[in-house]
Image (cartoon, rainbow, N blue to C red; front, top):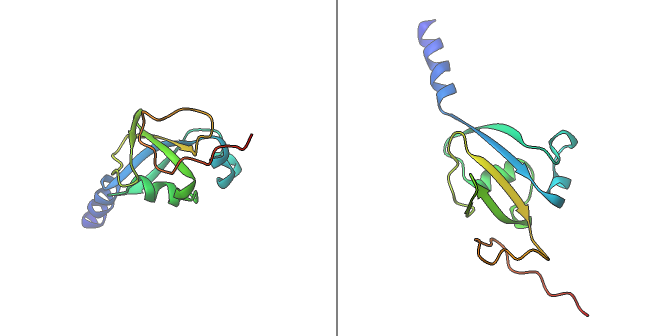
Length: 111
């Protein structure tokens, strides 16, 4: 019985708890109770930002900017326990040229 309890504790330690929030139209992919709000997830280690996003059923191709603890990261960034992740869609009018873009620029609107 003691070894069973120890095994359970080890599994709990190997989990990563992350807080995340999706913005704008990315919320359309989420269940209603997860939309426009920050929520927590427990993840197996290691987990990349891409795996985290797709695990929430949001296609990574819809994502243009990921911030982890306020810093821009790429899809292969490994999530750490306690991270706060903000996920943004492709921007059409906000200039984020100084940040790490993950998608190509959208075509300019015709005049």
